[in-house]
Image (cartoon, rainbow, N blue to C red; front, top):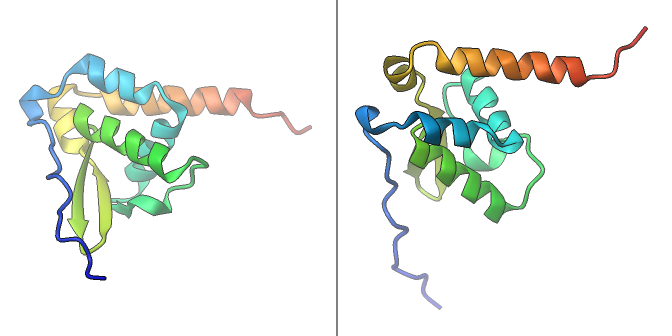
Length: 118
């Protein structure tokens, strides 16, 4: 049976000027999405199925959509793979220091919650 000729809908990304603070903060409020953002802060680009998260593929797709539509990430398709990248420069232009502040606060929270080895 031949493969479908239907294409996935085009990926939409807000322009830098359209990135909304409340959408960004909402996207960053989820632990899975914070993991994705932290990984992308350390790596310039990563294939979507390679993130260290324990969620179903459909749930992961939802998280990527929230991040993309909020303006936190950009995505591109290459053959049958989708790659994600953090829009760090756009976020810094729109909200200077926000991403670094949120990531640092998150790191402190994770560190404080970790069991102390003595």
